[in-house]
Length: 191
Image (cartoon, rainbow, N blue to C red; front, top):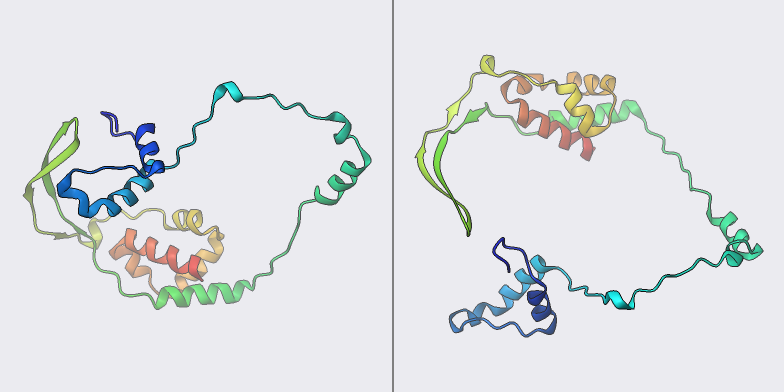
C-alpha cells in the first residue's frame, strides 16, 4: 500500500498468485487477512497497451438483410402495465405505520474529542461526554414531512396525506421527526 493507504498492483499480484507472507506472530490469521485484503484490493486487470487493436465496423454486415431482420425483431422495447389498487395501498400503508413500534422522544448526546491527523489517518480521543438530553417537542423545528416522504417513496402528496392521517401517528412526528420519517419510509416502501 502507498502512503495514502491505496492498494498497489504489487499486493494484487501477490494475492492473485497466493504468495502472501505474514510475520510469524500473524501466521494463524493468514486466511482472514487474505479475505479482507481481497475485498479491499479488487481484481488485478493488467492489459498490455501495445496489444491494443482498433476494430473497424463492417458496414456491409450492418446493412445486410439478415442483420436488419434481427434488428427489427429486437429493437422494440418491452412495455408492460401495472395496475395498483390505490385504496388498498393507502389502507395497507396506514395500517403498517400504525403497527410500528412507538417512537421515543428526541435525545441529544454531546461529546467532545481531540482530533489528531497524521500519516496513519485521523485519530480521536474523547475528552468530554455529557449524559443524553431529551429535547422537548416545542423546541424541535419540524422539517417538510411530505416532500421528504415523496422523495423517498415516489408517492403523490395526496396519497401520503391520506396515509399519514389514517395512521393516527402524526404526534410521533412531532416527538421525533427523523425517526418518524425513517419508520414511515421503510413501512411504505415495504408495503
